[in-house]
Structures are given as structure tokens and as C-alpha cells.
Image (tube, rainbow, N blue to C red):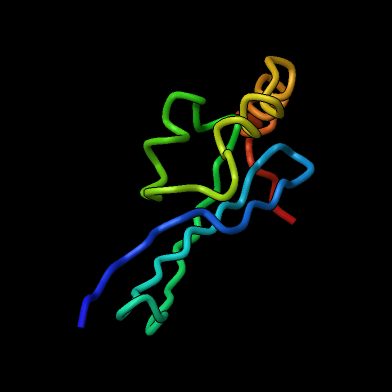
Length: 94
């Protein structure tokens, strides 16, 4: 009986404001057959995260989706500045 583990990014959602919702799947295999699967989710924000720390926030050993490549394409200087401006606004109460 050989137990192995794989962690990979299996889902990426892009929101209008440039945030990326990332899902990592951790799969436990016994003799090549899946016996367990768990998920970890995170949100990457162009106003709070940098391209440098996108890879460090994920623990995936392999990726079906190139998160850094997507972030590099989406997070233009203009998009980052726009998001930072929104985040710096004082919160409004209803």
C-alpha cells in the first residue's frame, strides 16, 4: 500500500475588479486511486498582492493553471492603481 499526495491549482476565477479566486486541490492517493480530496481557497488582490508573492501564496506542487501568467496579464499598472485607489477610500456606512 503506497500513499501519495498531489497538490495542484484546479480552479481560477477572475473578478471584475481584478481579484483572482484560486482553489488548490490536495488529493491523497492509495496505490494510484484517490481516497481523499480537500480544497484550500484564497483571493489574490492586485491592490494588496504583488506578482512576486503570487507564487509564494500557493503551495501547489504542480498547476493546471498558470496563476502567475494570468496575474501578469491582468494586473496592468492601470488595474493595480485603480484597485489601490478603491482600497484606500474610507468605507461608507449605510
